[in-house]
Image (cartoon, rainbow, N blue to C red; front, side):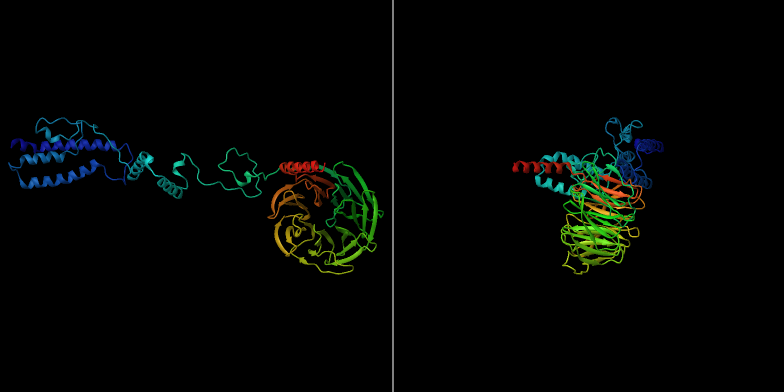
Length: 532
């Protein structure tokens, strides 16, 4: 009875409470090593302490109200020892030798003697458990289950977890827009773009291959003063003379010299076979010259003013004059003038027959573009199939597509500056682009399905366009004044430009692809062996 009463003395309770305070203080010091956990569940010892505090409060209240009893002393002492002991740490307490030591048998022997188990997030523990169990059960997975997991992984993550790497860039790189040229050297790339898988890029020289002098060339937008023959002769009208330059040998030949002092060459045009050259003059004459014999064959007079545009269609030679009329000449007969086309109110400055001979395109200073049918009968009048008025400036640049005979490209002057593509069969405009400068001439390239345009103010440049979207491929600069006319070499690899700065520049911008050239060489050698 005395021993039990001594256990409940105030001094004993103060020592037990002090031990409990020391234990809680140690736990709090250990918890300061990590950041405070606000959202996680309480630790086990915290839950036990909370429950024991509630039980201790209720037991002490009942003890104070009921008084001392000899029959309940031992039980009260045992309950008190359980209340003041927050937890029982294995290995840190000794076996009690008396009932006095049983009062504090769960108390740590020294400060900091208990271990600390950090609280983990429930989701993290579940992930860790899944990974560990996955390694143990991987061999027992059926193929169907693996396929299911792969499908789920692809749908949720966008990639297969089994093949995932530590550092992985997800998504595909964006492809470069068409016509973009990257000047930087790419060392590494995640994936090859479609443009890099094909050999679509080529080297386009920014400088001309050769520069020739063109003294006394007339700075007149409405004239057509150069043309390149199928026999590789370049004809150039300089003042009242016509010179021939052979591209292979470099030989220069004076072919035509007009007699009148005020007369000058206004236009030149080669026949398809390349042995006859037509020359239009200021006085309204149309001359036909034999290059081989260096002799004038015919002098056809039907116009009264200068002839600034010429175009051949087999034996029919069409000429456009300053009055706006177009004459058809049959060079085989004495009465050469077979037809007249009246569709322009001002000077005809652009004139071209389609490759198949079905259509004739004419552009004038009245901002009108006409498409005419093939040559009718003698002395017959006809009207244009299509009349386009979309251009806001003079239409000098007209050129037919060599691989699509019904596609026509036209370019407007300073007040228009547009290049437009037309379908001669339907009369519709297929595409257009604002070049931001005067369009003087257009030629097509069969090798790369592109077209080249010559321009005036302010850049005086040549521009290569991709067909049919008319995206800019390259710019060729060098002329100091506006480009007057363009011509394409017979092999389709070189463009010749003549400008008001009195120079002729040779641009090799359509070189044949080496692989295609090798293939063509092999085919020609096989054909040669077959003939032998």
